[in-house]
Length: 207
Image (cartoon, rainbow, N blue to C red; front, side, top):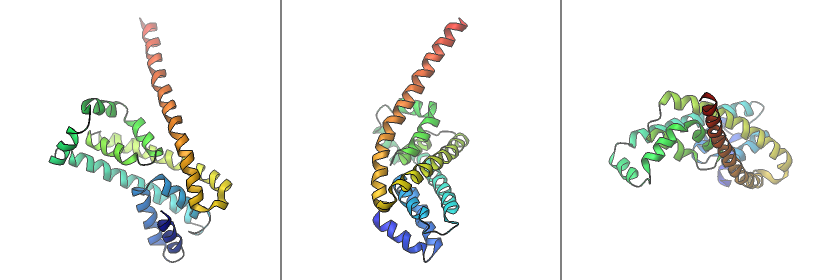
């Protein structure tokens, strides 16, 4: 990660094309930690005045391209020998498939905010043949939400921890990310049981 940041910082002063290529690939293959650390460099002005909007556009394109790639890979492998091997080693395969289909929006949104979870969730969306139009619509909304949240969060943390540099701020982001997971779990539990209670109340009123 340190080498990626050093390369990006150097290329930003030499060749913008390769700098944005590193951003594009890092966003796909490394994820939130890389994005946050690179945001530190962008907000410090290493990519010039136009760096910030171009950075956000690059992140959006990278997020959508990567997700289409993982989704397509999941669909492609479903009925191959490797696919059958994977299927046989997924416990309760049918129940997981049913759950992914019924909670697609929740899973895709959740995957954007938890480090290293995006690939398996998006792969499974393709694997379980989630409708492509539904997938794209949900994914675009999730990416835009993720971009808004991580940019605002990064700006606040970088403003308060700017003296630490990108790697020190990155560690602070890791700690914050650990707190984000239980918060999201609690939110989805409240949302799930709230819906159940509401459905029961509505059912009683109708009867």
